[in-house]
Image (cartoon, rainbow, N blue to C red):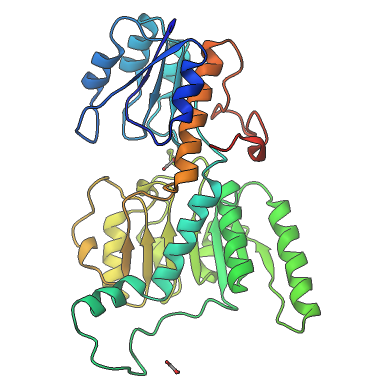
Length: 357
Ligand code: GLV
Ligand code: GLV
């Protein structure tokens, strides 16, 4: 291969490798055992000649790495993630490195995890599972693990982009919830879906579902029974500690909060405090403020369901993300537009046309 492409981690599937090797690239996959590579580790990988890198969201892609990549003759970098808060875009631009991300292929998988966490929290699945395994179940009781009925309740979505809208649809269609959402942009397609579904239910003699676009985020927090955070851009100055003590305080006492975006969007110390003071308030978290750590006390809270940043973890999606990341890097090396550039509001191709793995 004429071009040297590095992947800082082994990635699922083999299609991404074949795409690159078929087009004159030599692929080097880092097999370092430690989970998170340091800047120094990656500098050593880049070496003196490297055309493109596929990296991970746990890595700090700033001026040090982008200038090293430039010196090594590189022009392309892709995160294997839709989020890119680990990438300093100014540093990439300054060094002439094109940056790609992997939206689209993870939309449904991520929304399904947000839905799973919503249900797990509402119906206390993890707590009940632990109770069973501990041998504590000694017979059916009317009060045993009573949770929330979602039907007829309101689902609140903070950020109604691709993931937020897919999640909302699942909750509305699956559980006949009403919608309240907050987004800078109007979610026209989502509104139309809820209207049509409401009419369908009504025609069948059922209670119709409704939607409302909230004027403020506070309105969502006040009115919704289940709130999911699905922001874009997922983490920047405007979304840091967006959910803090004051905002938690306006939520319903028996609400469910789900976060599958980025940990620092939620003030985790405030959240632990709130969970402790409000045992009926429940939370489902895929992301944490200081990943891989949890703030003190969170692990002990029975009203929290916690999973290790696995929202995009389905085989189809992870292979698709690897494929997209490879296409991003390949596109730039071959002189095509990078496949998915995070600065584009709309993806280069319609997400449905992304080749499945
Ligand atoms: C995962 O968190 C991603 O941004 O893809
Ligand atoms: C519960 O198991 C019931 O039969 O109501």
